[in-house]
Length: 176
Image (cartoon, rainbow, N blue to C red; front, side):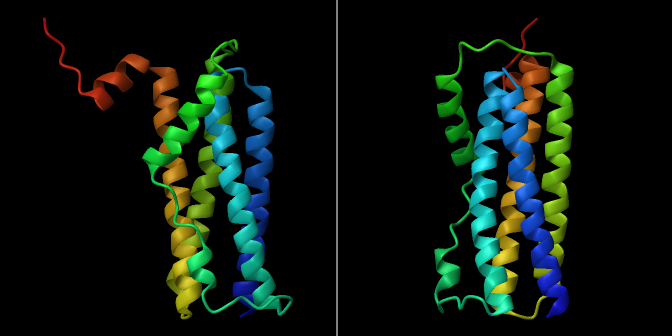
């Protein structure tokens, strides 16, 4: 139980750090796609933080979770749903200037590291736990962190080489 408490406390720290990073990186970028992506992922980190905090409070005895609590844990949106949210935000900021791709690469690299670390922690907790609620909760978080990583990877590919991204995603046929 102490390991689970420590792991859950670490999860809280990861979610706080993730949110802080996304908020800071978003404020520094003028690239509309990067800004929309970082804002959307930051919002998801806040939602994770709230649920992980509730789970931790249950572990420490500060709060008792209702029997149906796991049902209140939102099913992670699919990559497609998250991308739609990002595109909505993107439309609102299309008049912004683009900044250097090096800065965006660095921010995305840090973000991917955060998502990867969270994924590994949550996967390990889910795998090691004998409690069904803990297993399901952390498995769901791991799945969503994996989706976040995929979104970061995909939007970075678009930012760096949009032609290649369109070829891959839209399955363009190049005729000679």
